[in-house]
Length: 347
Image 1 (tube, rainbow, N blue to C red):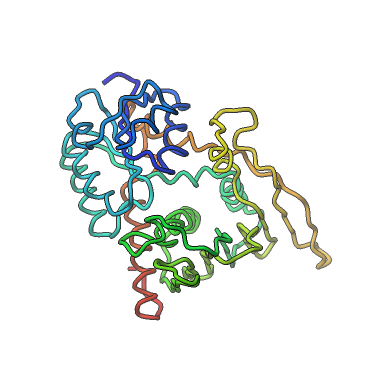
Image 2: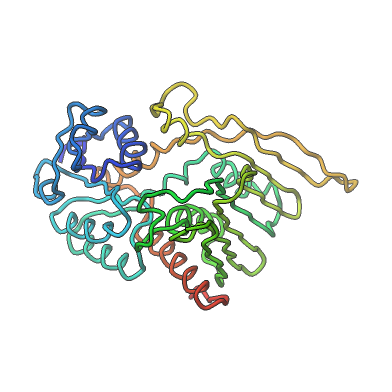
């Protein structure tokens, strides 16, 4: 295998077009060789030199393809990943990894049987604000943390006619945004003792959950993961409280908005967060001391750079199968907790 990896991108909807294609095109060592789509004209408008095929099996059978990136509807992730791995391809799956823990285990078993790597695309580990939170906690700036609030709210009062908001397996906010927030929490705090969740349909005509509030209980820390669709004042992203201080962050990482607007990774100012956070430290006299704090730069390309290093050089995967399983366990426990209206032990 050459050090430049040929990729087949499955799906050219929002996720494939806005995230994966630009990131692959702008990360050294990757060649976007093939796109699997039924709309060749849409693909060629952006990627005139890409090969376009309609059938995933054609890409899986192509000996020129090294890696398959799956950016298709959630209920297709597991079967497509298993089929690609069985054909000897390394696989990247957009989140959620699968629909269930059992599906995730089958995908990972196939990866081991085929001696190939599989990973889930958790790009928000490279959000500017998350990197900043992680550094503040690692440096002990806030002291011993007691509360962690992670919000990803929106104001979308109308139900859209798309599969993500339909009554189909894998639809709804908990499958859409939950994997991001769950993965970040696990990265910061590790395995919780228990999960208490409330998933709901709040909008008129909602066909899939459009709200979630999930608490992860640790011996001391309480982690709150929250997303809603009826939140006009949706600026809060993080509120982290420790015995020495608090960190408040409003506004989302800017990379998605820049990608939506046609910006390309690596452009001037890429990954810079235009809105600083607020660090509030407890003063010796009891009076809080507040200061603005710029976020560390973010860059989603770090995921693909690390994925290439894992495939070519044997480096550590950017997101391991074990980490993918841990997130899927939380997703399942959140659904179960809602159904049973009680806290569920993680183990």
